[in-house]
Length: 247
Image (cartoon, rainbow, N blue to C red; front, side, top):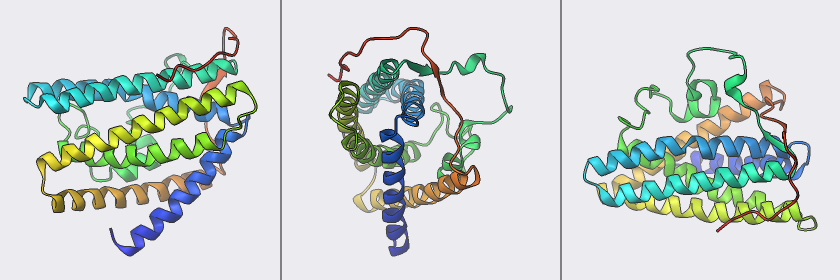
């Protein structure tokens, strides 16, 4: 990774950390943050499950098992965020019953971040049945590695005084540990297929893509003047405060 990319990575990571911490700490913006995490974590499960089946069919039992565990972890993470929303009487909007605002757009096309992160790849090339294993491993390694740090930072700014925030903090710290484990197996998976030098070159490429994606995301936020689409609605049923299951 060159000097410019290193600097922009540090600057971008700091800015994202500050913004995320402010969003998760503010009771007004926290529900939308939790909803976005629930959607992202739960939404990755079918992708990872399909990849696990593919790895098994290709004879890589080790990778298939790791991907299956990864999918199970993401399911658990989705439940943690959904439970946290219920504790504040919120839930993710049922988008299937919402009128579509645009058609024929993939998630990557709708998101400036993912459009930049996967620049040069079509939505067809990124489907689990055909995605290049090196592309999946390196891109997901970068995302999981950074997510582990982001979740830990956000957890540590949550107050310990009230039970709801304290339980959310415990859940997010547990998620951060899982993400660290995901990054570790993905890095090992790359070393099983490539030389150390090739792994480093691939990681540097996707680190550069992540830096460019963060810049695109910031540009998108500035264009919207910080406004984001609401992802939550009032929960149909209220729930008394209870502890998050993090085991």
